[in-house]
Amino acid sequence: MSFEPVIGLEVHAQLLTASKIFCGCSAAFGGEPNTHVCPVCLGLPGALPVLNRAAVDYAIRAALALGCAVHRTSIFARKNYFYPDLPKGYQISQYELPIATAGVVELQSRGEPRRVGIRRVHLEEDAGKSLHEGFVDSDRKTYVDYNRSGVPLIEIVTEPDLRSAADAAEFFSRLRALLVWLGVNDGNMEEGSLRCDANVSVRPQGTTPLGTKAEVKNLNSFRFLQKALEHEIDRQIEVLGGGGRVVQETRLWDSAAGRTVSMRSKEEAHDYRYFPEPDLPPAIVDPEREQRIRAAMPELPEARRRRFVERYALPEYDAGQLTQTRGLAEYFEAVVAGGAPAKAASNWIMGELARALKERNTDITSSPLGPGRLAGLIALIEKGAISGSMAKDVFEKMFATDRAADAIVAAEGLAQIDDESQITGLIAEVIDRNTDAVAQYRGGKTSAFGFLVGQVMRAAAGKANPRRVNDLLKRALDT
Ligand code: ADP
Ligand code: MG
Ligand code: ZN
Image (cartoon, rainbow, N blue to C red; front, side, top):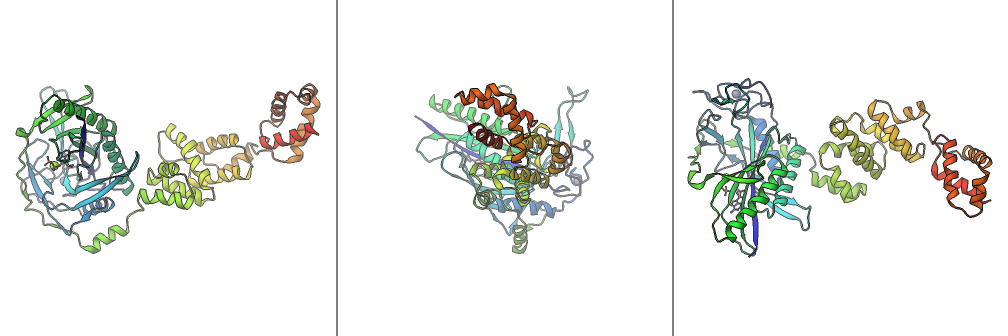
């Protein structure tokens, strides 16, 4: 019997607000432990939460981009559990009435486009962080840092619509790109601003009822997500194939061992005793507010990709690459606005510029070479003023300085020799000095031609337009 995997993801994304969701403390990552704290996020008795409007606006922006319906009224709930990093003894989250539901994301990399339903988007606060290592007494003590306690998150829950580990990884990567594009999340998975739990089950191919699922936690990279799912799918198929049953449980991905391990079973699962948060009124989103957020939304990656194909006649591949990030897309359009042909701009951005940025370990938004100067370089190539190989030299110099292409070309005498009489003069000298090669060529030894071209290029210190040299040399030798 063959089995089909069924996967649904729960993604936590930190919202890029300046302050936390229910107090004025900084939400920034990386402060000295317990410096971004106050009575509210430390859960001290009597402290009351006040909802951060910016967090709600970001959540709405993300929800709209995911095609969700935003609810006029949503309510906060207490999710009760005991853990040292949760000072109140409960997390403020949303349960029965989340901020948004019923969205969709399309995948299209392999084969048919596939739709992945978004079940819900809800707002919640993050917990603190237990520090089990790094202190002299770490063998006996665990410390807690509450800087992260109360940082705003959205949780995005998909329908069980994903059908392979690769699809799950693609979905997560598209979701990350979208959230970063929208400016609601920084996409930094190492710092924990984007985290993913994967729910997975398998069922006999061709059947519809869902199998028993396991939830795999702790997946902080695309590769781990894919690997963990591949292993978990294989494990479940093996269990079922051997006549056993999959147990509903939470598992952890052990990246060192390359397998998932059981963390807790259904019997040990938390009973969160959800109930509405009495300290917060419902969050109300009136239609004007939703409209204002919709109007301020940047053009989305998918729409921009299509526009790049239609408006600039770019190949699908280029359009896809150039819309990986908003910074890249904007840079490209600025180079084109600077007068460069679209395909030439695309080639330079995806080729030399991408390589140079990578070497410097930086990205397009902090490129030392701006789009205006790159357009200037492309203009010189288009005019035939410099050759392709010279252009690469000029590019390096532009990247390392703030000089313009034409200034570099003039100062370094790099301009390409394209002038007919100048090249003809060089050819005449070369013919005079290489009578043997000329005779060989005229005697039918075509390889002598390449040698003569080389001699002319040498005489021109490499600056002559090679196509022009070819044409003129041929004319000179054949007449
Ligand atoms: P729970 O109550 O255990 O949290 P939910 O019904 O809330 O489960 O679903 C959580 C996530 O698990 C969602 O992304 C959902 O799509 C996915 N999911 C639910 N049932 C299954 C299943 N049988 N197989 C795979 N994924 C599932
Ligand atoms: Mg759940
Ligand atoms: Zn605080």
